[in-house]
Image (cartoon, rainbow, N blue to C red; front, side, top):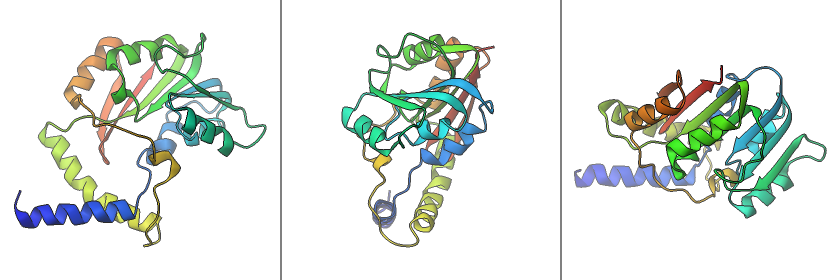
Amino acid sequence: MTPLSHRALRALERFNAAHPWDHNAHFHRWILRRLPRRCAAALDVGSGSGDLARLLATRADAVHGVDADPTITARARELTPPGAPVTFATEDALTGLPDRTYDVVTCVAVVHHLPFGEALTVFRRHLAPDGTLVLVGLCRPTTPVDHLLAAASSPLNAAIGWLKNGGRTAPAPVSMTARTRPAEMSFPDVVRAARAVLPGVRLRRRLFWRYTLVWRNA
């Protein structure tokens, strides 16, 4: 990388930091479009501040969100209107899920923190017959397609951040304040591991450094 391109990258990073927006929330409406219009119960793994769990309540009679961080779980409860059919618990995503099944299981930008194959096995075990699993994940860019999508995402990320914040600087949303770490698996690794656990699973690379996974327990 040349000094000029390095300076440009640093300037872009500073701009993005001053105009943040929630990449995960960008996929929430997309997730809803993959789900049945009504269902009895939904589980959101890694629920964070509860934005997706509250949105799932427009489709499900009851929604349960779990997150390993007690502080963000408490914040999710504070942000949830009284009487909403949504509960939150501080639990481990692999060992602390309730002993029951759900019509919908969602997981956004969390599974790269977990043993991938084991996490998918747990999610499958908690999915009711005909239930739907929808996952938005992060992977390590390794292929030309990955790098092309990353290159396209960078200017779009800056433009959307500027538009969403009305051209003004802003603090990061609550949902973006949780600690995270880089993804280690490549997309081809994700595909191979997912197909081993979820026959017929559909995966696709996305903009904004994400991929999506959809599987129906048919």
